[in-house]
Length: 420
Image (cartoon, rainbow, N blue to C red; front, side):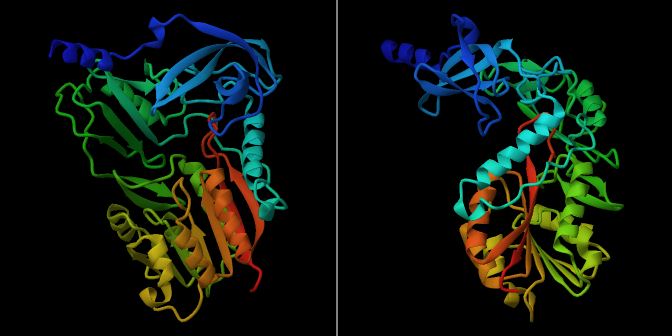
């Protein structure tokens, strides 16, 4: 029994990087990876190196660890030996240890070009998409203080911060340069007082100042209310309720530009029926309803549909269908009593992209135009390949920078049926 207990203790003991001898290597940094790192050759294989720029030479600290039953080797730039002309000094003192801003060391115009190249590179993996022209990335109005949602890790008796994605080391955060000022104010109030939980979420309406803090805290030293079920955001002059479980874009100002891009790309007509698939709280359907005869929002989340119906109050042309998109599109005419094919469909799926059945149903429905809004270039390319092979042509691919200082990129692709 004593032997078993000792073995269990050994299994539970986790190796800390700071307890291990530091290992360094001088490496040439190559192309960007899907996580925004650079690739480098090390010990005969390729590893991801965080904090670099393609073409640089750097002294890299090597991290060896086991994750998901696999041995992993990664690197973090320790010192730049031959810097890129696109390297800039990060403005945030947490940049690096926090790992939330993967690209704060890269000049902003170069970030935009890297994001365009990322989208283009994913499309070029498919023969059907090689001719698609990817436009220059639409810059964000603000490079900092744009996020309306923060998820903090809580450690050590109530400290708020983030965990480095490579080292897993916790970093206490006093002020985040990506977050809205209201979130930073709340961070100051909750710091050192939030030991009742291990994770907390702060969401704010950028245009309303309305704050949501989850979970509910009992600590009497916290003066900010918590445990709200929802908050209110305002987009393009209309108030939108967002429940705590519901998805909402983290960059409100750029999300408004996203709506305009979709509106202009679809060239909506007053007689059109518009379908907003993966609708969330109904942003596209509601804000574009003045331009069409009828807007149908499809969403499987009950909380999001509840929000959406409240958000559409007074708009007789908007209706919600609570179903999975693949199920709703398969029987849309029957479900909604449609006598004609919708003039336009918006696809705004999660990062994993559309369910294959959703694509198949869309190809049978055959709307004249489709707007595909994506936050993941690989899944976008996979789904666009199916749509193009199914009879659609790509008009434009517009990358949109919703997430400055990070490798993430949003995009809007407008497609048109070649059998219209």
